[in-house]
Image (cartoon, rainbow, N blue to C red):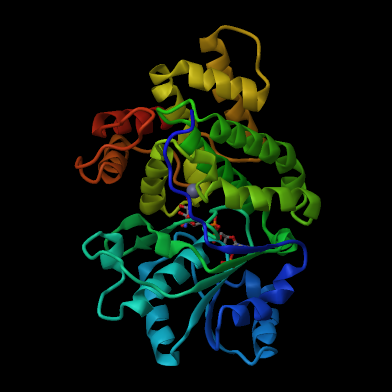
Amino acid sequence: MMHEFSYCVPTEVLFGAGTSARVGEMAKKYGAKRVLVVYGGGSAVKSGLLEKVCAALAAEDIACQTLGGVQPNPRVSLARQGVKLALEMQADLILAVGGGSVIDTCKAIAHGTANPETDLWEFWKRRVPLTKSMPVGVVLTIPAAGSETSDSAVLTNWEESEKRGLSTQFNRPAFSILDPTLAATLPKKQVSCGIVDIMMHTFDRYFNPITDNDVTDELAEALLRVVIRHAPAAYADPADTAAMSEIMWAGSISHNGLTGLGGAKDFAPHQLGHALSEKFDVYHGESLSAIWSSWAEYVLPANPSRFARFAEKVWGITEGTEQEKAKAGIEAVKAFFRSISMPVCIKELPCGVQPEEGIEDLALRCSYQKTRAIGSFRALSYDDIYAIYRAANQ
Ligand code: NZQ
Ligand code: ZN
């Protein structure tokens, strides 16, 4: 039976090759007159996209200012700068030209600008509830985080050495333009990080204690099969629009809630990964692939039949006992990650194998100094978290 849920994704999606040329029209539709355009470390400048976006806004008589320099694992400090700028120019739309890091920075700028009396990190620390924000638009350049339709935003406070997510309906962008041709300039590493993240957004919903939401489960399995089918071509050539278009749309619906409706989100691998990014500044996608199989093997006894179903429906593994199929499914994920050059343990990350103190520190960070448990498929305490990091460090 389908279990209770609430589903509201108000973001208008404009999808297709070439649609980024319509950004001026979309900004106008949402009433923009003064736009703060935010971008990353330079790829949007190099490709000429930023210039085209500003020209498209100007063509609709929309004024714009730009703010660049967003880094992967985006910093609160730059978002604060963005708030200042948005207030000065009285921006009425914050426009992201980039991936998850740029979009999340824009969400933060929007919250900070709408609430100038509050430092925006207070919202991420849950010390002040967020009750209003302002519109964010997106021109997506990388299929990965799903932030273009998601209700979350993840920021890193470098001074406090913390990476934190905030989930709220105020995080849903007003509109998102998904033009798969923009991903053509992606480095291969970012293509594979994105593919992992997309799969993980569905894994982290699929592996949960409620296993009889048939529509949800079948949608999740289909999405994963499609990503696995098209990933090799997108990885081989990011300019392959046929493959990239499938991956890009899968990325949005993998994290807008659809593949988990009626379930109880798990998201333990994401929490485990966030501590790795917080400590070592590794890319989000690689933090996830490095930890997933150790997590999966650890939680498998909680519900082997779920893993066996996953192996059958997603990987076509039909031979063997339930336990054998379940294990083969985990191995299939590892082999797939390796096929797109992604790490499957900590020592394959840029930080390399960790000393004992490093593993303890990760477990302390992830458990918020032993004050929280994570996960729902199997709830994980500090000791469990420590054991998973340790296994991933072998
Ligand atoms: O900064 P530039 O020069 O633009 O380069 C970026 C960056 O180095 C590059 N890139 C993006 N599009 C490109 C391109 N290079 C060439 N051509 C293009 N078309 O890719 C690199 C990574 O960009 P980033 O925005 O960091 O990638 P991603 O979309 O994977 O976002 C990762 C961030 O999103 C968070 C992650 O934790 C991480 O901080 N997440 C956000 C979520 C959300 N808001 O819903 C959910 C996710 O689970 C995730 O936690
Ligand atoms: Zn993610």
